[in-house]
Length: 494
Image 1 (tube, rainbow, N blue to C red):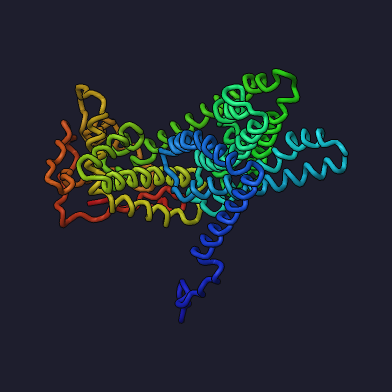
Image 2 (cartoon, rainbow, N blue to C red):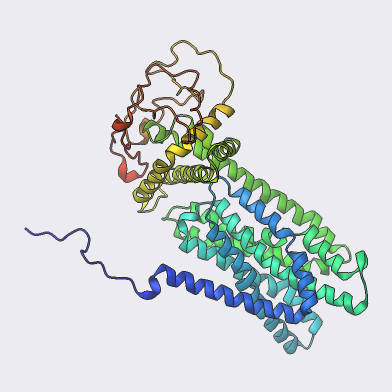
């Protein structure tokens, strides 16, 4: 009986608008046009001199904020294209929509109520928070929908939202500082008593984190939604909305602080903004440490299957060890090797997070495909990355202790020879049987091909670890899948 092939022999070609280069081109064109229009609008309102002064002052906090968000994202760095898109969206598209919408709404309220002062107050405390947080949240939503692989948790939501808000605040600061400079030109004020100095102190020195703080609440909502399983559709929809509403409320409170009296701004700043900033900073750093713990707990399964070296879970779970590995690679083989080590670290981290989602039932249907892609990426970089990671492991290893009786024998709590104490049978429940000697290590790490000697061997190797395989006999190990659909026993490296 004839059967149909599992895949069509001639799959239909996608429509022209479904091609990647068409979408990238359309998005780039949209952002470029928005940037030119917002540039013309800001220059028209501030004048050429005011625009240049505002641009020079507004750019000062941007590198610091970008470096802070990039530091938060160092455990599993997202691609630069996502950050560039978010910053461009905030600085161009979001700022343009906000300026047009806020101006239109304020004028309409002033005309309807015949109260321009009340319209300005209402626009600043009600209209502006709703409009601005909505257009900034649109960038987070787009990354969440179309770059789902890069959006896996709270840290990704915080970084995406924070970078978007940094771009928005950059454009807004140009406008405010440029208008302040124009006011000083008319009144003749200068120095610390000028409006420009006061605006710079409030917006750049005291509260450069204001817009990122508001939008980060939206990012946290999306991040928690990313951690939810596919069955909780209502939760996945309500969490981002709740974060957006909180962002709007905090933004409205900040904008309306001037209406609370002479010291209303300082009261809101000291009693509300600073504590919220500290709390969110603690939350993000705690989440970052939790991510490192996930790396340390999930990667030993791939050690047992032979994909990773024994010390790599501990090394990859330490930011200090990661940095030492990149420095070692750069010092001995140059920038390209350091980049390969950084990619190895990022792929290993993504593999740990993917495995955790698989164990908890949150993995998508492409789990096996994604796992294979990550393992192949690690395998192709192992010859460059492993000497550097081995050096970092030995540099950060705890001091040796005297072995207790029975150490290194099958069935005991045998370590891997690096002092990290992973039990041989601890990961038997991952879908493959554990046995003594389940890890077949690579041949001793060589140099980078530049005449450098190989790192020294570990001080102690358990007796049950088999001898290294010759180079011609090595093959890729099996995939120790954690997905519920792949719980059958899998063979490991011989």
